[in-house]
Length: 210
Image (cartoon, rainbow, N blue to C red; front, side):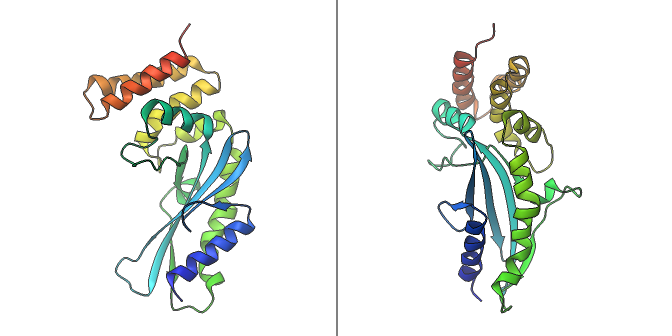
């Protein structure tokens, strides 16, 4: 069994669940309506074992209103991503969405005969953990809750996305409270200060405090 066969099988399973593949066999999206998409990706590593893959499943939700504004104000949605602008607003390894709240990955032996059997744990990650999370968080209010999670979340991305999710759900006061964290980074001369200044200017122009 080849790695390409493993991910080709993953692609077929994801398609059967309604997901559309993006640039590779590793990233998929699902239309949730109202400008929200479910997002799923798979990260693999060999860890020095030639006949073994370790595959981790990631799940998230993308809000077009959030991501489009960041792209407009900052020039990209993740610093230094060279135009790769399609990322989830909130995303994490599915293990952090379980009661154990820790990293989860599965061992895939390339010596097995059944591709369906070896990818079954990762597909179960999607159906049992990822899909419920996506469906429950397809709103700005739910995104706020997810963005405030500590484990598994990328704090630098949350710094930009949490104020937007808050203001889009109508909580301007809390949004500006979160924006103050970004202003502190500017005062501390963070290397991202020029980017943050562009974000702050765009935010305050579109969502002025009364």
